[in-house]
Image (cartoon, rainbow over all chains, first blue to last red; front, side, top):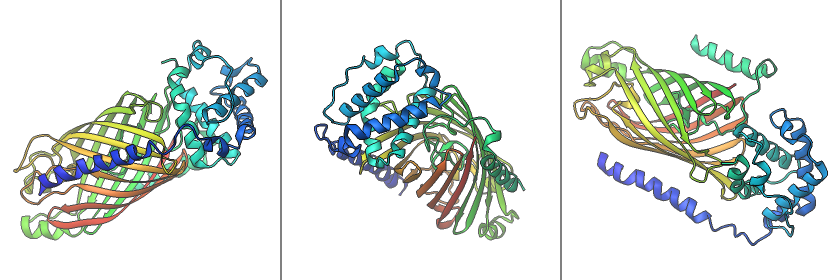
Amino acid sequence: MELFRLNLAVPGLLVVMTLILGGCQNLTPHTDDSLYQQLGEREGIALVVEDLLYLIVDDGRINQQFKGIDVAQFHRNLTDQLCALSGGPCTYTGRGMRELHADMAITDTQFNALAENLILAMEQNDIPTGAQNRLIKQLLPLYPDIRNL
Amino acid sequence: MTARCLVALIVAGLVAPAAMADIGSRIWATGGVTTIEGSAGGGLVPWALLGSYASDEEWGGTLALSRVEVDDYSLSVFGAGLNWNNRIELSVAQQTLDLDSLVFTLKDGFGLEQDELRQNVFAAKLRLTGDALYSPWGQWSAGVQYKRLKDATVPSAIGARDDTGTDVYVSGSKLFFAAVMERNLLVNLTTRMTRANQGGLLGFGGDRNNGHQLMLEGSVGLFLNRKWLVGTEYRQKPDNLGFAAEDDWWDLFVAWVPDRRLAVTAALVNLGDIATLEDQQGLYLSLQGSF
C-alpha cells in the first residue's frame, strides 16, 4: 500500500505539474499584440511610466539611483521599451540594459522596489492582472542585465 | 495564554506600522506562510522561499498562529521566524496536539493518562541560489529542522525509538509568470530525509523502520491576483510504527495576503490515518504577521 502510493502519487504530481507548465507555454505567441492592446497601446504605457516615475521619486530605496537623469528622455525610452516588449510598433533607441546599469550595483532590494512600483503604477491605471503578469514575464530576461549578474 | 500574547503581538504589528521599521521589499505574498513546523512554505510543506519580505539588504520576521482541526485531533502551533538578507531563515515552532479521542485508546491499551503531546521545532533554512521570481531555474534552499518532544511517554509506548529527531531537506521553488490563464503559478518541490512519525509528534523511528528515509513533498499554487493564492500540497511520510499505519498528508488551500503585514490561510486537510484513528480530515486555519 505504501509502495503503491509512493510510486503513483509523487510521479503523478510531477506529471500534472509538467503538463500544466508545458501545456501553457505555447499559449502566448510573441507575434500578437494583444498585450500591447491590453496595456492601452503606447498612450496607456506612457501613463503607466509617468505614474512609475512619481512612485520612484517618492521611494527612498531607489530614488538616489535615478538622481540627475533626463526625466523626459527616461520616460520616452522606457515607454518605447515596454511598448516594444509588449508587441507594439515601437523601437527602443536607448542604450543596452547591461551597459546602462553596469556601474550602478543594483541590489535585489532595489530591483524588487522597482518591480513593486511598476505593479502599483499598472494597478493605478487599471491594467488587468493578466496583462500585468504578461508584461513582467517579458521583463524577466532583463533581470541579469540590470543586476549585472 | 501564549496564544493570546501572539495574537496581541500580531495585531499590534498590524495597527502600529508607523512605529516599526519599513517592512521588507520582496513582492507581495512571496514570503509564503508559516508551516506547522515553523519554516516558511505552505501549511504542510516547506518551500525554498524564506519567510517575511526581507530582500538582500534587509531583516524581516514573522509570527504565526495556526490551528488544525481534524476528526479526532486538534493541533495548535505558534511559530516565529527571522530572515537575514533573504539568505538565512531561523525559526521556532511549538506544537500542541490535543489527543481528544485517542485518550481512551491510550488508557485502555497502554494504561497511559495523557491528553496532549507537545513538540518544539528549531529550524534553519539557507537560500543556496536563485530567486523564485527572477531566476529561470528558480530558487533553491536547504533546511534543517531539529524536533524535540516534551514528553516521550506516549511515543515510546507505541514503539517510537527516540524523542528527538532531525529532518534535513532541499527545496526548489519557482514562480511562473502568466502561466495559467495569464495567472502566476508557484511550484515547489521538497525532498526531505526524516525518521519522524506524524511529523515527530509520535516520536522518531520505530519497530518497522528506524532510519532516515527520503520523502517527496510538493505544492502548486495559483495567484488569482497578488492578494489571493489557491493551491494544493502533498507530503509523503514514512511509516515506521507497527502500532498503526501512517498515511501521506495533503491539503487544498486558499491564502489571502491583503498586505505584506498579514497573511490568512485556510485549508481543507487530509491527514489520513493517525495512530489507529482512521481518515483524519478537517480544517486548517493560520494567521501570520510579518514585520
